[in-house]
Image 1 (cartoon, helix red, strand yellow):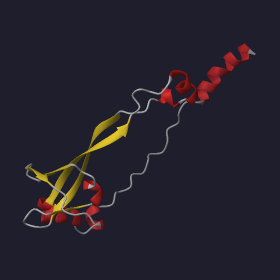
Image 2 (spheres, helix red, strand yellow):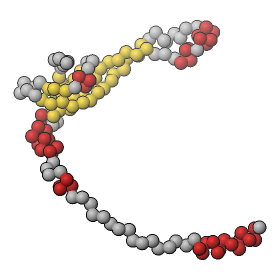
Image 3 (cartoon, rainbow, N blue to C red):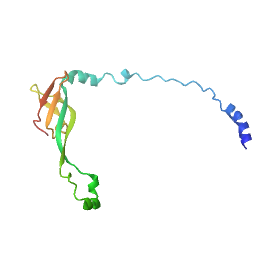
Image 4 (spheres, rainbow, N blue to C red):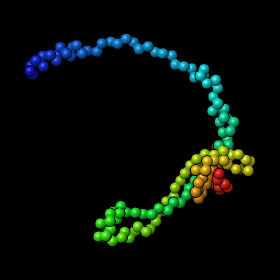
Length: 139
Protein backbone atom coordinates (compact mmCIF):
# COMPACT_ATOMS: atom_id res chain seq x y z
CA UNK A 1 0.00 0.00 0.00
CA UNK A 2 2.84 2.41 0.75
CA UNK A 3 4.32 1.87 -2.68
CA UNK A 4 1.04 2.53 -4.42
CA UNK A 5 0.55 5.68 -2.43
CA UNK A 6 4.09 6.80 -3.19
CA UNK A 7 3.58 6.26 -6.88
CA UNK A 8 0.23 7.97 -7.03
CA UNK A 9 1.36 11.17 -5.29
CA UNK A 10 3.17 12.64 -8.29
CA UNK A 11 0.17 11.93 -10.46
CA UNK A 12 -2.14 13.63 -7.94
CA UNK A 13 0.26 16.51 -7.43
CA UNK A 14 0.40 17.10 -11.16
CA UNK A 15 -3.36 17.16 -11.42
CA UNK A 16 -3.60 19.54 -8.44
CA UNK A 17 -1.64 22.38 -10.02
CA UNK A 18 -3.59 25.60 -9.83
CA UNK A 19 -5.40 26.61 -12.94
CA UNK A 20 -5.64 30.20 -13.94
CA UNK A 21 -8.92 31.73 -12.98
CA UNK A 22 -10.75 34.34 -14.97
CA UNK A 23 -9.88 37.91 -14.03
CA UNK A 24 -12.09 39.40 -11.36
CA UNK A 25 -14.40 42.11 -12.50
CA UNK A 26 -13.87 45.41 -10.69
CA UNK A 27 -17.09 47.27 -10.04
CA UNK A 28 -17.09 51.04 -9.69
CA UNK A 29 -17.79 52.38 -6.20
CA UNK A 30 -20.56 54.82 -5.49
CA UNK A 31 -19.55 58.46 -5.26
CA UNK A 32 -20.34 59.55 -1.69
CA UNK A 33 -21.01 63.12 -2.80
CA UNK A 34 -23.98 61.84 -4.81
CA UNK A 35 -25.40 59.88 -1.87
CA UNK A 36 -25.36 62.73 0.68
CA UNK A 37 -25.80 66.16 -0.92
CA UNK A 38 -23.91 67.94 1.88
CA UNK A 39 -22.31 66.93 5.15
CA UNK A 40 -24.69 68.12 7.86
CA UNK A 41 -22.34 66.92 10.63
CA UNK A 42 -19.48 69.17 9.55
CA UNK A 43 -21.98 72.04 9.22
CA UNK A 44 -23.14 71.46 12.81
CA UNK A 45 -19.57 71.29 14.12
CA UNK A 46 -18.69 74.55 12.37
CA UNK A 47 -21.76 76.28 13.80
CA UNK A 48 -21.72 75.04 17.41
CA UNK A 49 -18.35 73.28 17.82
CA UNK A 50 -16.94 76.03 20.05
CA UNK A 51 -19.74 75.44 22.56
CA UNK A 52 -18.97 71.73 23.01
CA UNK A 53 -16.97 71.01 26.17
CA UNK A 54 -15.35 68.01 27.81
CA UNK A 55 -16.44 67.29 31.36
CA UNK A 56 -14.18 65.36 33.75
CA UNK A 57 -15.54 64.17 37.10
CA UNK A 58 -14.23 62.46 40.20
CA UNK A 59 -16.04 60.91 43.11
CA UNK A 60 -15.13 58.89 46.17
CA UNK A 61 -16.64 55.45 46.54
CA UNK A 62 -16.39 53.50 49.80
CA UNK A 63 -16.27 49.75 49.32
CA UNK A 64 -16.06 47.05 51.94
CA UNK A 65 -12.99 44.87 51.74
CA UNK A 66 -13.92 41.22 51.72
CA UNK A 67 -11.40 38.40 51.59
CA UNK A 68 -12.90 35.45 49.68
CA UNK A 69 -10.85 33.15 51.91
CA UNK A 70 -13.01 34.14 54.88
CA UNK A 71 -16.28 33.72 52.93
CA UNK A 72 -16.13 29.97 53.52
CA UNK A 73 -18.21 29.25 56.67
CA UNK A 74 -15.95 26.34 57.69
CA UNK A 75 -12.78 28.44 57.51
CA UNK A 76 -14.47 31.35 59.27
CA UNK A 77 -15.50 29.03 62.13
CA UNK A 78 -12.07 27.45 62.22
CA UNK A 79 -9.92 30.61 61.90
CA UNK A 80 -12.26 33.17 63.38
CA UNK A 81 -13.54 36.37 61.79
CA UNK A 82 -11.46 38.23 59.23
CA UNK A 83 -9.78 41.07 61.14
CA UNK A 84 -9.70 43.29 58.04
CA UNK A 85 -13.27 42.79 56.81
CA UNK A 86 -14.61 45.80 58.69
CA UNK A 87 -12.18 48.28 57.16
CA UNK A 88 -13.78 49.92 54.12
CA UNK A 89 -11.65 50.88 51.16
CA UNK A 90 -11.98 54.28 49.49
CA UNK A 91 -11.57 54.49 45.73
CA UNK A 92 -11.55 57.55 43.49
CA UNK A 93 -13.64 56.98 40.39
CA UNK A 94 -13.11 59.18 37.36
CA UNK A 95 -15.65 59.84 34.67
CA UNK A 96 -15.79 61.78 31.45
CA UNK A 97 -18.47 63.13 29.21
CA UNK A 98 -19.41 66.08 27.07
CA UNK A 99 -21.77 68.98 27.24
CA UNK A 100 -22.75 72.27 25.58
CA UNK A 101 -22.39 75.84 26.78
CA UNK A 102 -25.93 77.23 26.63
CA UNK A 103 -25.48 80.58 28.35
CA UNK A 104 -22.87 83.35 28.28
CA UNK A 105 -22.56 83.08 32.08
CA UNK A 106 -21.10 79.58 31.64
CA UNK A 107 -24.11 77.34 32.16
CA UNK A 108 -23.48 73.95 30.58
CA UNK A 109 -26.06 71.36 29.62
CA UNK A 110 -25.06 67.69 29.87
CA UNK A 111 -26.59 64.31 30.68
CA UNK A 112 -27.28 63.65 34.36
CA UNK A 113 -25.22 60.45 34.40
CA UNK A 114 -22.10 62.46 33.49
CA UNK A 115 -22.15 64.50 36.71
CA UNK A 116 -24.25 62.28 38.97
CA UNK A 117 -22.69 61.92 42.45
CA UNK A 118 -19.55 63.82 41.36
CA UNK A 119 -17.39 65.36 44.09
CA UNK A 120 -15.43 67.48 41.60
CA UNK A 121 -16.24 68.64 38.09
CA UNK A 122 -13.82 70.23 35.65
CA UNK A 123 -14.69 71.58 32.22
CA UNK A 124 -12.27 71.76 29.29
CA UNK A 125 -13.06 74.17 26.48
CA UNK A 126 -12.15 73.63 22.84
CA UNK A 127 -9.16 75.98 23.18
CA UNK A 128 -7.76 73.88 26.06
CA UNK A 129 -8.68 76.13 28.99
CA UNK A 130 -9.86 74.23 32.08
CA UNK A 131 -12.38 75.49 34.63
CA UNK A 132 -13.70 74.02 37.86
CA UNK A 133 -17.45 73.57 37.81
CA UNK A 134 -20.27 72.65 40.11
CA UNK A 135 -23.57 70.92 39.55
CA UNK A 136 -26.43 73.43 39.79
CA UNK A 137 -29.30 71.08 39.10
CA UNK A 138 -30.23 67.64 37.87
CA UNK A 139 -33.41 66.79 36.02
